[in-house]
Image (cartoon, rainbow, N blue to C red; front, side, top):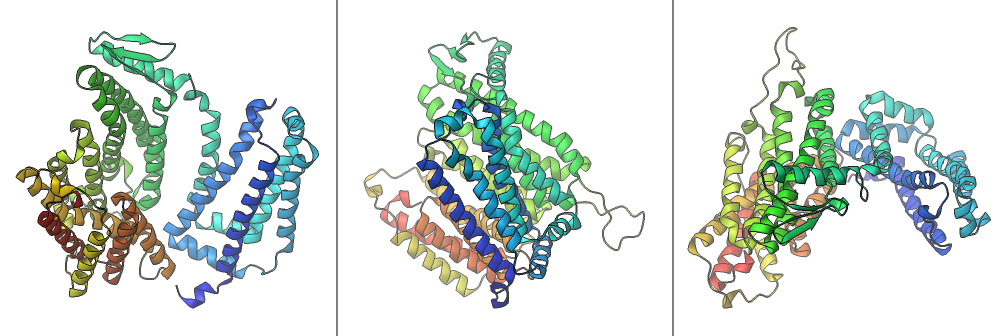
Length: 539
């Protein structure tokens, strides 16, 4: 990060704001914990209490959405910095307003003992609400004056305020519609009826206890709990489509995307959940209860979500209804816009989709093999399929490397082997030669390409921004991509270290070739060590 940026007033003010917010949150938590815990179930105004408890989450959602949009769209971030630098340095009135709000919000805890507060919550609620509003207004006005906020939110386009409002309302909407999936409620009952309908359509007789939401087939039975209602899949699809909309906004027609594709996607997500539970019951009754519970139940949901996410990507990219038709800059009036590249030739999807297939392969093997690693040939086949589908796009990337990249790859291999946990791999029987060949193909050639395209050429590149972006964005992208890489590999120290090395190699050239070849060499050396020691756990 450049020294001039570190000393900018906007950065100093943001640092103070974050530190103060964390300190206040900790202090409020300690104060309220000492007074006991307020349960909305013990409060006369139950709905009001639940809504007020959701408000901090709404503010957190809205703030996170605004921060992420500012980071992902450099013009928004630069606009904020200009407005913050131009703001008055001393803002005593917002500080006083914020402190007044904190005092009002904590006043009921001082005025009423906990039993009285629960009984008279409707009287204390105005103080809580007024304090929260004043504290929030004081905090945001301390960051920027009202006129500057208005200019920042409304001066760029309507997407920022609409996104902020949507994320603010999301927890409130979820809370208000909780009757759909909570306890023995509507969505859970509909899921139970849907599973029963699947077996009825297949002509299979089942035993059912609707009151308990239990469905049985032969000697195997399951209870459809509220967590199996499909609401989590709907929430995941909502978050996925929102992130995709932010990242590809210039190329999307938002109206059809949200009014047509989004309702269709969440409906299919819920239907997939019904088929997942039906498959679980059939598998447990006819094949293996252990495989159904320990394998299918754990991984089928992620597999179906991954397939649906891939279908959404394909539809958003290929359906004319969902694509903008603005003419290219400099094109003559009335000239048809240039056709979008085919899915196979799209460099963005070439970075993402092979990784999705790679993750799908990891959810498939536990469904069919009691030892998931035995299914690695299937994983290798799906990885080959993913890279083969996007061969036209992959040919456009630069795959060149330099001696420094190879040295870095050798260092990563040394780090990985040095930190490897001890195993008894040498005492185990050697795997089948076909399995070894598929494992070497995947480990040495396929995995490095797929992981580097996603973690470095997509995640790191997306966060780091273009050549004119602030230096801190590159460091943030390096940290985020390295932590994600470490999480995938399950070895935090070695995984993060390898991710940092590969990320630095990528940032040198902004081309994937150096990081890919370093990763290939590292995995090849690790594979050679595994073969020499007959310790296949290293692979």
